[in-house]
Structures are given as structure tokens and as C-alpha cells.
Image (tube, rainbow, N blue to C red; front, side, top):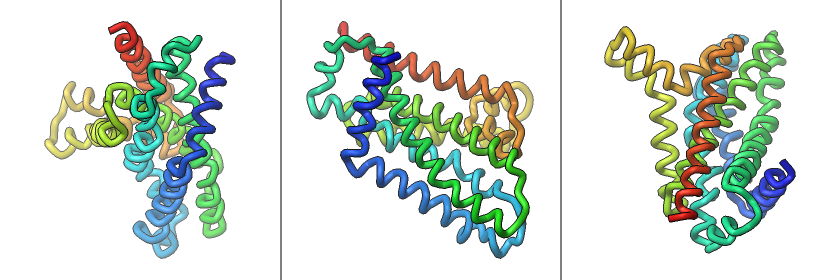
Length: 240
């Protein structure tokens, strides 16, 4: 665990030594706040409901996660430190886990800094703290899954641009796949499968303040699978 934390600290220092982390956090806070107060007209609507604020989060994460993870391995290759990392006394799994924890810490900081939004909105109405806690838990879990997927794409990509674009496209597909069933009016087993694959579908219960163990298992499974694929891909490249 100490080696994983050492990698995470290195990644955090690297993230905050560049403008990327600051720009991502600022962009996240500005966009989500503008969406709630200006696009959705929260004050004019006169409704004590933050679901519009959290409802856009899955789409936002589809862009935020690749922005945080595009440098994970693509940047290492560009700087020529990729091979050096693989020769250090760390396993591929420890490197992947460390980078994942660092990106998750940045995402958690962005969510923490967004707390003034629901706090200020609470002045306009009465909100259930338990519902807001469930919504933040759901966003954090979805962020973890999205970051794991983003790192996997970065481990496959040759540069940051392709890592970002590939991550965005894949995550948008995972977020919006449940809409396909609704748009095409698909029913039965195929609709259930498309819904099960969707990140947004599994966040929906959290957005209503409901914590479902099936959704917890889904986000954990996606995160674990993507991190395993990242580690496997690095191992394959190391010995190829």
C-alpha cells in the first residue's frame, strides 16, 4: 500500500504543478453552477429540488474524467518516462492504482468545492441532507468508474489528444446507451442489457436519494475491470 501511495503522491504533485488540474476543477465548478442557476433557472423555477444539478453530472464526468486521466500514460510516453517507470520497483497494478487514487483525489476535491452550491440553494428551500449525501456518493462512485475507464484508454493511446477524445467518446457511449432503448423503443432483454451498461442509469437511483447495492456493485465492477485492463495492457507492453 505504501508504494501505491508513493505513486499517488507523485501524480498529485505532477497534476498541481501544471494548469490542467486547476483548469478542470474550475471548469467543472463554473459549468455545473451555470447549468443550475442559468440554464435550468433554479431560482425562477421556485422548486426545492437539486436533481437538475446532479442530473447533468454524468455528462460532465464524461469530459472531466478523460481530462484528468489523459496524461496518465500518454504523457509518460511523450516525456520518455514510461519505460523508466516500468523498470522501477513497482508492479503494474501498483502504478495503475496509484495513478487512479491521484485522479480520484482531484475529482473528490472538485466535488468538495462544489458543496457551496447545494448549501446556497438550501437558503431558498428545505433540502433533505440524506438525499444530497446519496447524490454526492453516487457522483463520487461514477467518477471513480469514469476515471478508471479513462486511465485504461490512456494506457492504449499514443498521445494525450487521442486519450482524451477516446475517453470522451467511450464514456459518452456508456452514459447515453440507455437512451438508445428509449429512443428506439426497444424492450425486453436487450433494453435491460442496455440499461445495465449505462453509467447514467445506475446513477439515477442515487440522484433520487436511494442507495441500491446493485448500483454500488456495478460501479465497483466497472472500476475494477478497467483498472485490471490498464494493468494487463501495461504488462503486455512491458514484455512485448
